[in-house]
Length: 257
Image (cartoon, rainbow, N blue to C red):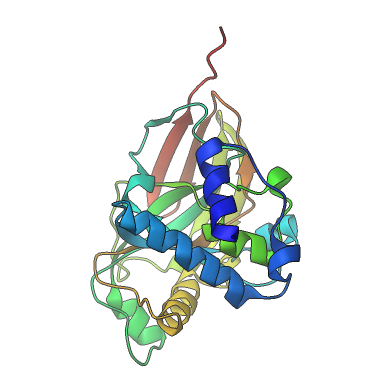
């Protein structure tokens, strides 16, 4: 079973070949069924869902991975890393980092949805780093591979500045991401499906069709504002997003005997 293979890869830290040929390279619904089974298992083991992530929203990231549509994954409580904390070496297989606008919801997003309802449901926004990872060897993924693999998710970091939407427009933000103080990625709110709120609307409609609508209190990572960047052990990654401030995370150094 594909869920077994992905679970084993995560537990053993040994990446597996792509699953798209077996699932069907265009069968996105079958891939979401695999993701749902992995979510069910994680919840059964005590995991708590705290939100969702939108992936593949930036044209640059779509070009990096050779896909042409967004996807989503599930965020669990144990995926959150404190701002400025260290991710221990060996925790992840082949991590990359993206800078994003994260929304914290103050209302459920159910029923008929439109941009006005989506905007009104946001309590505040924060700067975020998403640390993505793939259980598929060498990031050799198509849309089916990443969907089945929970949107290639791993960890996320939220900044400390909480900004309501009446104080700024998410589509107008500018982003700069640095690795060890050297700029490695830049972008803007418009690079996220034209507007991070458009990504939120897409997500709210999509997850509702899948039977799991967005709820008050959940965190939504709305998608990359620019190209994702691979990181090595020992690196420090930080981003500055206008109106939302900065957020950073460190990656532990490998220990050699």
